[in-house]
Image: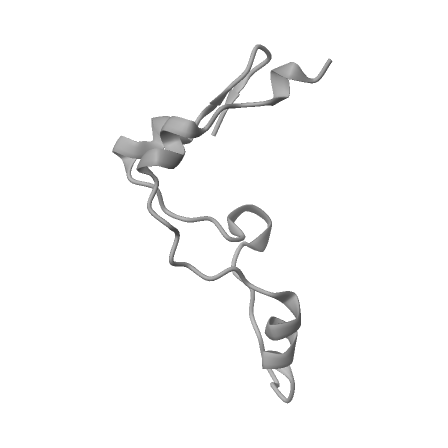
Length: 71
């Protein structure tokens, strides 16, 4: 039933470098705002935690299924 939703990433994992960017924790982020008067957000809805990928590597990030292709 769900076989189309699984992908094999063995080849991609073999050439992927470990991401050195930290994952944000909401509790640490909120703690950093304590006592602050101002804070801003920058396009959180569509850019949250996105990492730049070189144009030549974008095809490696695509996910092809029998229904659609997305990256």
